Length: 258
Image 1 (cartoon, rainbow, N blue to C red):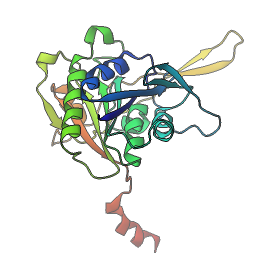
Image 2 (spheres, one colour):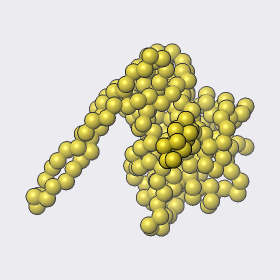
Image 3 (cartoon, one colour):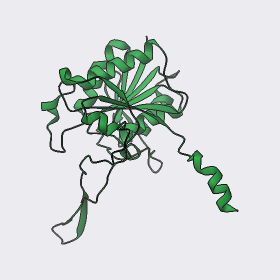
């Protein structure tokens, strides 16, 4: 039987995580290891300053007490498996993970950790129309279908990428029958502002809440990025690699340092 490990960054009680398990269960044995609490935007972080504890919720279902998605994958591979699982999937995230947001994303980090251990993986996110959209109204049917099809293709064939690479998938906020199909994309150029909100507690001490930015991006002539695909009703699949070296600039820097 094929072994599939899933995690997320929205926490073990997330409806997206439950939807992902439902989608992938026909393909093999699904084990869940997810954070106890929401870890959105935690990036590819590991917990080094305190111990972590598995808490069993159900058969093949664990929460990692205050761990990150990277912790979940790292420790699951060490503690729960004698051999590597066949596939690791992170999601289904509530909200987009496109453009430079991939560097912030705990969802992407779960798949990234898998790539470090040479295991086929993908992250999957359900884009919302706006930050107030009710995910129960939108549902996860299109995301579930996507997760099943991509996982099945990987498990029954071969992973299309070389080592230290993973797939980052974003699903448009549209009904199942309105989707136009898949589009292979590059990560777009996200436009960021500053949405920090200043408040004061009852003692008069200042604190900040960081808000959410609208999904704005810098269009390119090719119109081939993840933002454009989602805008036009396609499922975006972006290949991501862990090598962040700017190879084109090595020669320039050699000249510059002289």
